[in-house]
Amino acid sequence: MANHKSAKKRALQSEKKRMRNMMVKTKLRNAIKTVRRAKTEESENAEDLFKKAQSIIAVSAKKGVITKRNASRKISRLAKLLNATTAA
Image 1 (cartoon, rainbow, N blue to C red):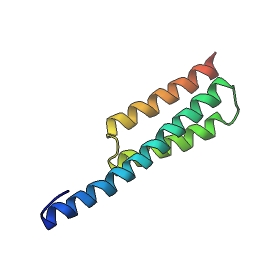
Image 2 (image 1 turned 60 degrees about the horizontal axis):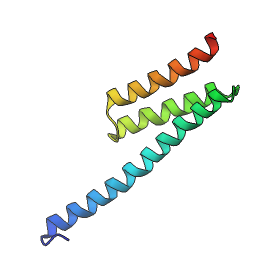
Image 3 (image 1 turned 135 degrees about the horizontal axis):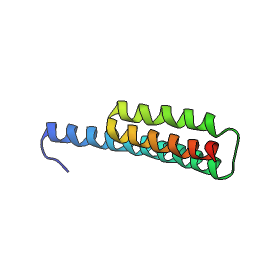
Image 4 (image 1 turned 180 degrees about the horizontal axis):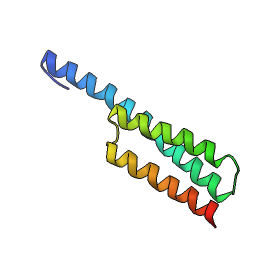
């Protein structure tokens, strides 16, 4: 553990940030998984799930948990996945 007051504070801040990032990343992964699962099951609510996942991805990028490019790539790949099923 840190010895200086400022270092202790920084350690606490880092821990809080780490916990928040873990929570957001878990939420993000679960949203992506539900969209993929709905797609494989040919569910009609896949579009709604995609919109929710898109929102979660955008919020995680805004919070700085993932980068803007990473968020864009994830959204693009999910959209491509859903469009492939509708076209087929």
